[in-house]
Length: 186
DNA sequence: GCCAACGTTGGC
DNA sequence: GCCAACGTTGGC
Image (cartoon, rainbow, N blue to C red; front, side):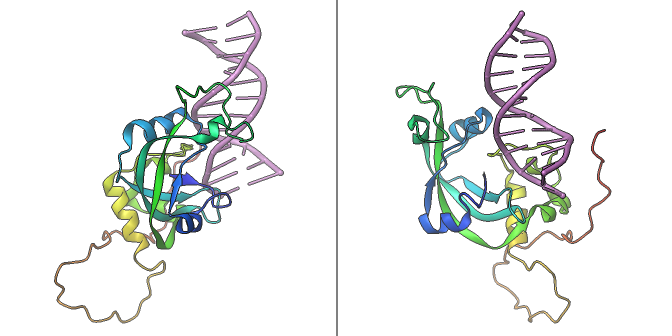
């Protein structure tokens, strides 16, 4: 789920803990919230139009079928005069904080990760503010966030013969320079 | 600020 | 229902 941190970012979610995801006025995004999301579903909390843009935190769906109150507020920029009280057009979800990630996973880093090939967010012109993410892609991103941004070439702490292995990041390097990208259409 | 890519609107 | 014009998104 995308949001502009200038308006409402991960630190705001840390503060309020739960936030109704109002203001979405795109039917595809609405349909995803209304028809696909279920209570408990994990969410990647993405900062867009940010510096840098990227995945900033984890959240989960707390409530589904939430009527977006802003559609009935004439003073709101999201006011929809055509929406009826008894048949609200804009339905959203309550998003609950899970955690602010230890570090932001920048869009550039996502693009440089082969394991994320095919992710909707990385498609050209993917502007949808609510997008489905596969469990595999979700896990890859969380793993990246849990390891240092710049791998440091120095002695690692001795590894215990570990009990339950911690979920490890994929072997593929994230720092690999991007392969030659298809150029934009002319 | 630029601009590509998209969704929506509305005339016909 | 077509489609041009327009508005918005969002990376850069």
